[in-house]
Length: 248
Ligand code: PGA
Image (cartoon, rainbow, N blue to C red; front, side, top):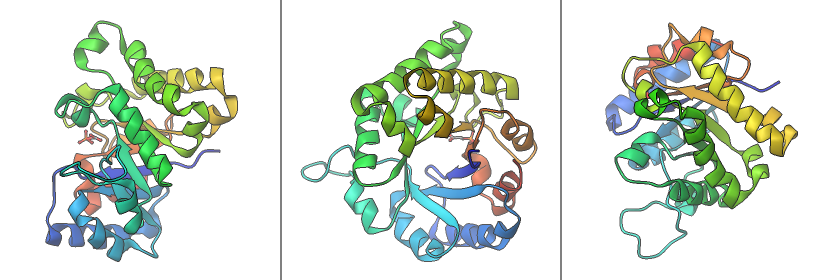
């Protein structure tokens, strides 16, 4: 039985004060959480997040990672730096990295490899644009994004990873994929992995992301192949985030 995971993705939000308050609120409500819980923070706040969360049951990580180990890569943060602050997770391939910052499938695969190299659990985001869904190419797009990672790292690498299916048209828009729409893509992803390695397919957590909130989380998480959520907007207020952690 796979454990349900709810991971927050704060994106470019928060301040020293608001994050302290948010984490205090999350910790205060953790006794009611039915899921495993983690937060992914802007790099600069990670030392503070570590200080507040170490020794608690809330995991934490980064929103991206450099594919490089060290050297002349201005502005980058490496896996070993994230290790210095005990990060457990690194989001890779978020659609905002892909569409706004031009990260290609191959870049995402390299970041996935870097996370694993440093013992971090990559949260690998996959998802189609609205025009791709309308053109009927959702499965093709998700398969291509996943194949880039499998091609570089092998299917076995997914055993130490989390996948997040996030239809781009549902992110931050209030438009959630219906539980059945999400389930269909999750099942497709799991079946695709199962063709290569049934054990890995059974084990890997596949989260859904895209306008998840306290009102829709229960139904989404009750689908057989949805193992939790990657949460943007609703991860910024403790009460909203906890409402999702109480689902599932
Ligand atoms: P959202 O973002 O919950 O605000 O739609 C999800 C994400 O981008 O991971």
